[in-house]
Length: 357
Image (cartoon, rainbow, N blue to C red; front, side):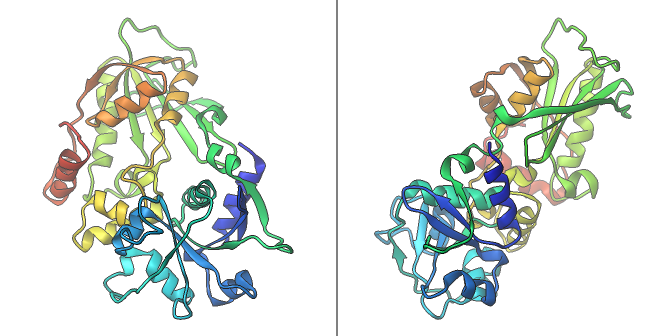
């Protein structure tokens, strides 16, 4: 983890260009924060091209073009008719219905694949759509430069640090402490030690502590959304942990399966158009699940838990923790928040992501 990666991500969030330094130095500019003036300044005397993920390229019917076949990053030539607004329509699938006539597009050789993938990862880390204006870095560019290694290592689990601990009495169990973690430049994650000693000491357990990994969901946890089961699962998990005599709940800032709040709301818009949660993420250019369970494993080690019973319906969480060195002695189902308005959402979890209720 480096300061350069933090600064590069901040630059992208501000709609500024950065250079990814790899085998081929690539200048990148986030499409969703670019207007005509910014694009003209970025291009100078050359014409920038467009870089998107294979997931978005598949929706644009580009997967059968030679330069896109088998590629995880796809580069598209930008003819004159693709201005800043048209590029945004190309990048954002929520605009597909309002701008249905896209193309024809011509893919181009992506160049150094590692550089291209690091560029898309930088956009994801910034909470932006993985869609970029790109061109070769030129002599005289004064953009911030960051290496591939810096981007790919950013927010790695080994950079996570405990920040502070405090008492946090909860309705589920007043004898609860909160432990706050953060990586430099990254979001804050919380570990709730429920019934495990309000003085900060860990109580011994003959059995592995019941543990829940809960990804933050502003719409469900705070606003009471009926589109998902997240808010009800949070309450039910705390109650179950308290009833078991104590345990751990990790509150992870990995909204929308790791794509971020605004992109999750884009996914909601796609769901309104008839796509399920899996297809919505893919159409946006993301993987089905962008979460990093290595962060959860590092937090568990930080509070002294290397063996747990995991409260989840998602076998992928079990696999992710075990691959990161945490022993999951049992998977305990969690049933909560099922209703008429999230029936399709829950069916998608069951049928497409392997959840076991």
